[in-house]
Length: 381
Image 1 (tube, rainbow, N blue to C red):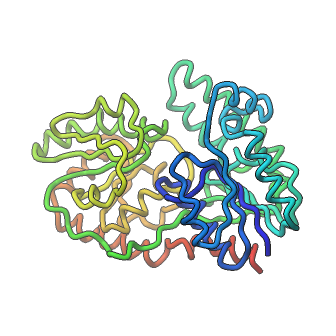
Image 2 (image 1 turned 180 degrees about the horizontal axis):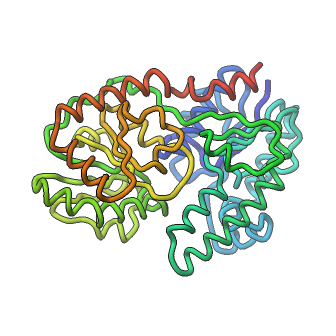
């Protein structure tokens, strides 16, 4: 079996959620097929590491420019899809496809579909990390001024792409039942494959010694910026007033200026880190205070695997509802978020017990093998 897989970035190192999902898919496909993976190299792609996993990588440098983005927008009629369109990557995909019959074309993300357009394959699968039009529409609901207007326009453009491109795929994969409901009509076969987390070999972390909360996320991504600033401005001051010794860690890549501005004597903004576990080791509780977004949260699974309970909004726990009460506490407004976070920070024993329950639930029901089983059974049979 020969597979051509198209994704945004070389997924090793798997240092963000999108790369983690793409890597999990590629590794499992490579266990039973010859996989050629086509992607951008963002400067730290570990091509040799993927080769050792049996994956043949065809990459081009990630060199975004205004001129290239403008050409991409004209070609795709979407700002976000145009950003990921280049003739260099199109050529690599076509070259890979020309080297032999393609049994499976596996495309990660709606935005990468134009790059793979025209590739002949016996079977075509589109793996949606998010239903993009719904994701951007959620930005528009919390956005203000010109940013909100631009988000509405981009949501409409992505909706048009979804309606025109999805029917060409034999299978569309989504990460939750709610995401399935957000799809346009005309999609022939839909599989639900949520995100997963393979247990860390070292097991859950020991209980945290201090009342520390952590938000681990890519802190330059719009929904995470909104989440961090809302939590930092509306929730944390009251938590800290109740527990003056409490600390908040904001951990993740490329923190936006508004996130950096939250730094104080009780709030640490770490910026990019190579490993989040030392920060989770300090945390008694993790938070996921998202008010917009889509998909399922790999960072929630990561925190639970580490034995840390998570206080999350309903938006953040979309697709992981089975974990509510088993590691996850839902709080959708500032008052309930304050109560939940303060309570767990003050009660180390309760936080530890809830974290252990979350770890066990993730190990039992949310590994990548469990999550991706419907896709793998469909394409490998």
